[in-house]
Image (cartoon, rainbow, N blue to C red; front, side, top):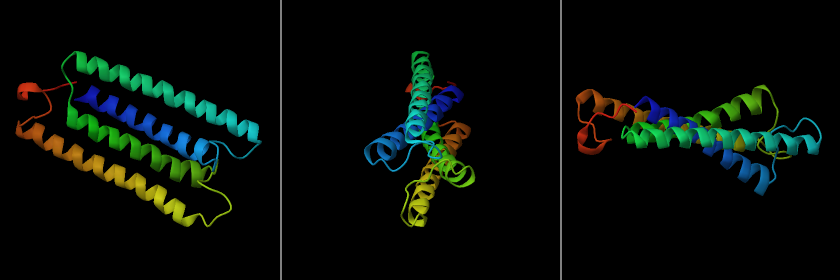
Length: 157
């Protein structure tokens, strides 16, 4: 279960970082990862974010492949952790990057409150969904009614 959850969390973080970078940085052009300097430095910071996201994605898929190879994949824990990782990334970005460090905002030259509420609300929705799924999966494990792996066998991955 532990390795399934770690791979899910890594993939959740990487996928949310990719969605942020592709949609808000590239397609919409609303901000760069670091907007407190020149546009060239902002673009370079996007490249570093993309590099980190790809490395985390590779690590998550590598761990997932290993868990699957060992037939130890805990499906519900994986999906719960993926949602928690995605929500955790988005919450960190919205609170720490946007508000505490102020390295960028979601968007500039608009009333930011609706954007912040949507961003944080989305993060909380991912986190709540992940927590509910995690709690449900833990209850199944404790009750001994594991449905994550073939034949009801315990999946320790």
